[in-house]
Image (cartoon, rainbow, N blue to C red; front, side, top):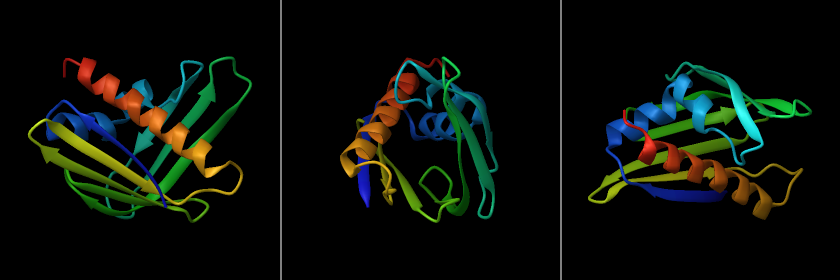
Length: 136
């Protein structure tokens, strides 16, 4: 599994809300400024589904990132399986200096593991920036 991690200077409640609410996902879920998430839906419960449409801003590329939740523990843990069978585990750990958010995921075979780790870390870094600058 590949692991990415970040410490976010915010409350666990704020981190959880901004991570899971579709209207917020659409604002942070991109690895670079030339991509965005124009659509997001999220049914956060075991057996529930999520779907995020990720697209290049120039309109040349787009794909749906989707999966089914296999485990959800409020403000603590999210696990899901993607359409291709790969598994993802996200742990939210409240600490004195904020929330440590750790994602572990099965790699795909199209891109190198290093490239996948860079991409997921970039999205996580974008989330950290979004949360820490949000007035919610």
